[in-house]
Image (tube, rainbow, N blue to C red; front, side, top):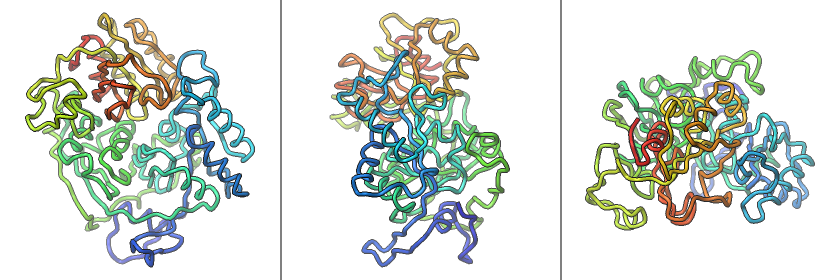
Length: 460
């Protein structure tokens, strides 16, 4: 990473500073007139796409330019049941795992493998290990890479072929996105958190509202969030169709990174990484945070979300209602559930588990409900077990698992019984996201915990 040096007399946005700091070549002569060749500081791979990118690179007779900047992990299709091995429920999935392992070894790439104490979901372990740092560019073949923008990094998801190019050259051709600033000002009500903030934004402006933009989140409601809440906010920028989401680093950021394995011993001064006063954004949105209530999705897109006490709108798309088995004018609260799931890169960090455990403590899940917790990383799992959270969950009737993406999505081959209604701490509620004909309602881990106890969608 280079230290940013002012190149323009005009005030700059946080995004503009990182972008300018990483430009190798201006490609504005390209047909879109706005692209650049950007230096890439960190590349993260996982077993679902990593083997393909590494295999393609090797078949082309190339090797990674700098393996020390590349990391890989088993998270997407690896089994999360206790006692797991290379076997996975995804058809052909074992080959993805073994081929990624072999390819990383040949290429000299650091791999956080099954059984490794540092294994976990990409976007959970990268911050946990201090791999992401303010001002760096970090990419991964996964749409939720934007999670790491919470550290003031420029982080975005790519495809396997782009990962191959970046590994070989340390660069990537990128079309420059427009800039948007979203202000969350005003004190959040009790029980309202980052998941509610982002669902509120998406419900207000639509799932395509951030398309083509690099978004900076700011305002006192953002700075008051802890780092894990900020990660939740940036994680779902991709559900707003944004190129990325980011937050200017501050003392909380520095305190979080201090002592992490891959972070510098002497942390640099990142005070320059903020939008200058007078910086111009292509679009600005102002949210009064006091208007935000606990949010729950009713349909098949994150934009199909409402405040928990509201009813499904009269103009709701019929296709979404049909899939979810619901009607306009219906309340979400009180809907019977079959499954409660706490997991994913959005809400399976230690603070998420602590909040859920506090709600569950001393109670039992409702009869007929299947409930499970999948920690976001092995470190999160160990911390939770040291604090006795696992016992709180299992005593209540939850299943306690190894870390991984798990049932956030169906690509791992595991699903719930067909037709199940699921309350989930994940990021997507698309048709079939968690399996065939699964009806998913996304919400905070607090609401998932309360619903598991009640046997129906409920508030804590």
